Length: 129
Image 1 (cartoon, helix red, strand yellow):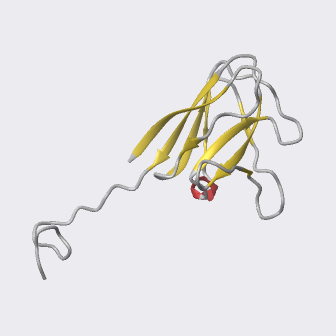
Image 2 (tube, rainbow, N blue to C red; image 1 turned 90 degrees about the vertical axis):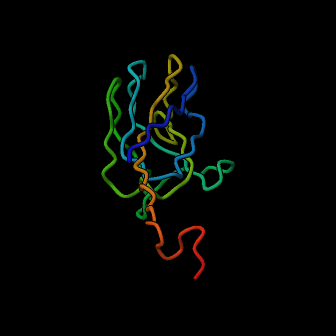
Image 3 (cartoon, one colour; image 1 turned 30 degrees about the vertical axis):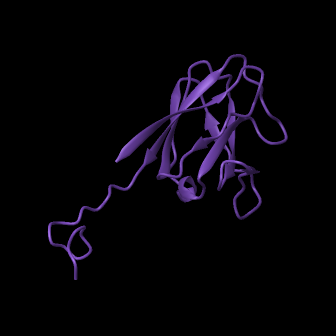
């Protein structure tokens, strides 16, 4: 089941967004607002929403995606499920790009549908075994 998260936002004059909780599933798409000042996107991630770290791959390369204003980015790699909270950065750690106006993104998260137990199934509520 696809869930759309409203946010995060990179504020005017800033390059780093606020954090958003994506722990319910795997990020599959990031929607970039039309107001976005063109730049690559990089990321900070957190397990608890308090302490964030820049996102790198095993080769020590900053995870970077090309972002265009008024577009959507499909996240096809498996890195979309390696964290609970995320912040978006316009530009890179070494070369951030400030945004001219507030830029509110949307993040699509693929959430596994709960498995329903049938009546009388092992472990169903109200049935003693």
